Image (cartoon, rainbow, N blue to C red; front, side, top):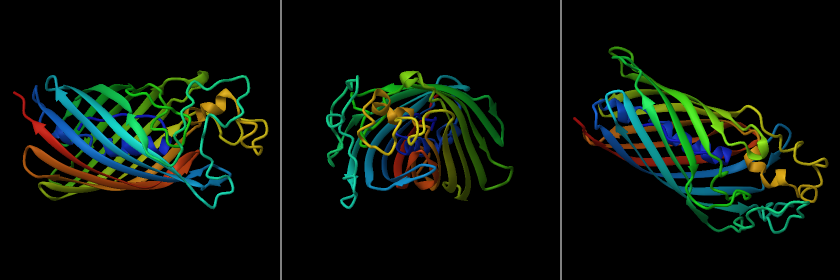
Length: 327
């Protein structure tokens, strides 16, 4: 499969990125003839827990997300491939009933906004499912190196909102920001070996909410082993690292401990778009070729480290890919 791209809530959307790119090169590995294509249908589940900062852990809510993702690629030639993806997301927020903050649902109608009116006052942190189409992503990949051991494929993409959804909520399905990833996908299979190694590194240019630079690095690395010619398992790491952005404890209010009364400003309305999300996830995955046309894939992962973001307690995916031959 060609890489797919999403954006928004850090742990949630890094999870989707991780699940999407964890099998980046498999479709391309089937052949590089003009007209080669693949279509992937995938189910993903992601449960998030604590929000981690460098000083505090906020542990009084959780979220659950169910995603139906359709994606595919098409070889324009032996070297050039186009790809696209579109997820449909249903997500809900659950408050910890023992929390002294009542779970802190983000209701734009309850805040005392100062000299500012939120552009969207829909309330979705009501402990029910909300969602719809998230972000449409597409891009172009070039197979620069196609040796017996190495594959190297630079790519560039673009993602933008495909649906009408709010972003001021813990149950928000995205941050509603366009993004342009520029990166390279790598695959290495040593000679006469059942081991394989995959990597993906991208710098993601993002729309700048309120003029703030929220560009970020995205990285992925996996080590896998073919137990049979048609069955492989791998372990992987994935990371998102925002270079700049805001600190949630210091940059949104002059009185950070007087919450929520001193947070009624435009920056706080956009806080999920502005925070410098940083996270590292670890997981395991498998690929099983049913035959030359169908591949079954799955993965499981959780967060190993996070800062200024919501950690993933558990997440898994199950996907079926159909390959189509070209010339």
